[in-house]
Image (cartoon, rainbow, N blue to C red; front, side, top):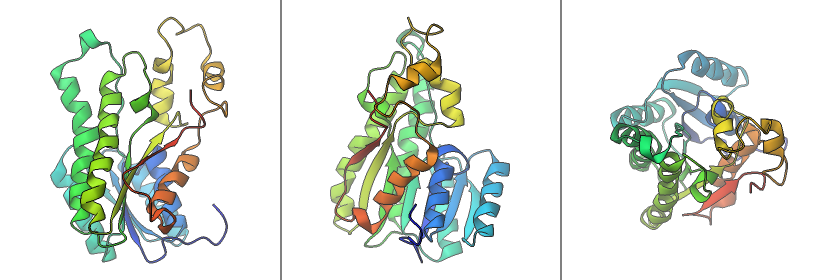
Length: 260
């Protein structure tokens, strides 16, 4: 980030899934540019509170709120707590999500419900509850994935849940645009997070698993020949949440290092 940039001075943001990975990087980026930040987390209280302490030590206003996006009432509470704490809401960055890999014959209704409840329904109701507090100039940034437009073995549920987000922002852009609110999505590519480390090998073709070292595979599947860093993905969220993107809505921005 360029020194002296304060695009969010005096503004308040909610970041779901903000205790780790991309979400934590987004919280840091928004706070570094002046935003007061409410960090929603599901289970990792220690990481969330550590991040809040870090942000406060750097002069930011920050609070952590336990909130499972699978429960819309908890998301509503997160947003209302943020408004009560900061007196306003200007940005929603929806970063919470879960992965899934399995073959078609193994997918169960419970799998479907679990993935879509968090990745799709959770983001929809985050938008609904945030929109109740956003005014003209409000910004909503959801999370899709490059998987929404790539074919990967065993990735049907996850990819479909993210593809729905791209349709969601497109269709909600008209409704929210009438109120001067923009809504877009980021589609991250492979990013160096703990979730990526856990699931990275599953992205390989089944016939390649165990035969190609992951660093070599990653280097041959992107123009920049590496995984992204969380802070590089967070830069995309900050752009879409800022006035620099005031004329961009209903779109999905791929931040993927030229993934192919």
